[in-house]
Length: 173
Image 1 (cartoon, rainbow, N blue to C red):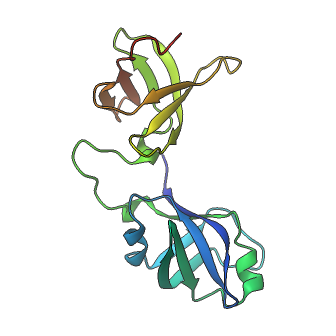
Image 2 (tube, one colour):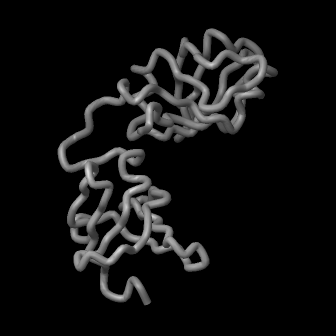
């Protein structure tokens, strides 16, 4: 079972005082204002595993973070491409009939007739609706792209680890 959830990926440094630019992986950029600490998904030599957020800002779609433990651009540079995570217990409750990406990734995708299409490998966020990337067991076959629409997703069962879908006409062709 997953114990941590990714909330952002460091994409670059910001300024000379150790700030970083983060691509948010949460539903809301505002979420970073309520997080006190983040952890590094992978250990980085010379840096602590736990980072204390001291300031947040926003630059277009990116979040600018300052950490108590990172005070120079050289230290911040080491964070580039790393994922910031939080304990799963700190994830706020979700709204009814909605799911976090981390809950859906890995689900087995079935048709309404019970045919296994594959496993939900990735979720692509588009302007209008998400798209589920379903990877077939036979990896030589192309991934299936399924729109995340209420008319397509009939049932999500997190306990069983399955999602039942009604494929739009011509999607498998």
